[in-house]
Amino acid sequence: MKIKGGMVVRRISMAVMAVGLVLSAQVLVAGSTPAGAASGGKYGDLTTGYALSSGINPIEFDPTQFTSSACCYAYDWPIYAGLLRETVSGSYVPDLASSATVVNPSTIDVTIRPGIVYSNGTPLNAAAVKAGYERNLTNPHPGVWDQSMSDLSIDVTGTDTLVMNFSQPVASTFYPLLADQESFMTLPTGSASANPNLNLVGAGPFMLKSYAQGQSIVLVKNPKYWDASAIHLTGVTFVNVPTGPQQLNSLESGLVDVEGIPDSDIPALKAQTKLQSSSAFPDASYFFVPICTSSGPLANLKVRQALNFATNRVAINNALLYGKGQPAWSIFPTSSSYYDKALTNVYAYNPTKAKALLAQAGYPHGFSTSIMPLPEPQDAQLATVLQQEWKQIGVTLSIVQTSNYVTDFYTLKKAQMGLNPEGLPGIQKITTQYIPGDVGDTCGYSSPTLNALNKQLQALPPSSPKLKSIWTKIQLFVIHNALTVYIVYAPEVTGAQKDVTGVQNIPYVGGVLNYWGVSVPG
Image (cartoon, rainbow, N blue to C red; front, side, top):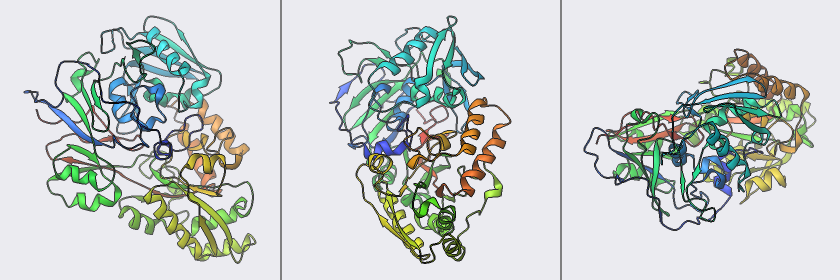
């Protein structure tokens, strides 16, 4: 979840920034193919569930109106696409751009695919891309773009070529954003006074056909998309399915073809022989406890290490995720190429050792502290578990309630620790938590060692073989200094009807279907 510029967790904005839906039932005519109608051909429409009626998950079709990228990515990504596209492996491949190269820490060279157009036929060349970025930067934005966006300027060097210049050495940081909301190229087609969600077209594989508030979003295939032959769907329809038991029910009833499944319903899904499931471990899908290390007992390394040893990750995985997750020994899951195997079991549950560390730190009888979980049932449950586990070593943990997690924890600091249900991918794992200048840097933590490693990381292109060695040093530093209690990696589980093929999620937080691989019969 992005609170971009001070990026904290992508789900935070959705969960705590209650923004009422402002759109009444609206229709945007994008083509003549009726959504949901039988195609009569090889492929058909895909129906998926989505929480369309939640006041904390505003529906937006204009990237400049996003409160967070995760709020709208599932249905806006196929409308707009990006210069790059994230794949199911987490790598990036060219999409609207034919190439994007980090040539130095402050420069990215981009070549746009020649001849590509928006869905209404307007050319999408280098000048149009520059105009798209400028629109994103200059329009009032209720959320915040990634802070590297503010350092950007663009030089158009040819019809289909441009150079992205950054005033700071953040080119490698910005590179993944070529596939994110910052790089959604929207073309206004109506008057400036019109609702910002209306009269916009993109160049992605689908077009917005209609939106009925609280009921449905209907997308139809864009025949002008440069790689339309790779899209094996005639359309995608999002129908309103609130989060919770209704998600599995919608699959069992046949209301939807594909649906994300809450952790609590994973066993029930597995028992459904008429359904299939797909699981993935995004490197940003983990529960963790950010710590204010500036004062009090938590400023002591041995105390923070004690809390880590007092956390039974295996038991939490079994109880909270039905054994489907994995203990978080580091900032990357074990499936990541950056994971350092030397950290496996580094904080294996050991309350005896935890008590000894507290005694060495000068707290033989424990101490009192506080934690603020995100106001969601699973986070509240986990906070209670930690309260019970840490009590065994003498730590009294008070649970602070909140209705505005970001403000209360990161700004007003009403608790010494937080509890986040999701982290961040890539370099944002450190830049948004441990590097000065970001709201996610709890209590202003700063380390010359980590700052220097961050600079080395940002100076390298995404393909550099040196990245792994630097990430290893960063992981060792963060974990051995116990800057955070990393608890468990959660799977992103998707259920689907048996006749849906190619069901895979890209590792975007919250789980986003890979529309370039899925198909349903016509």
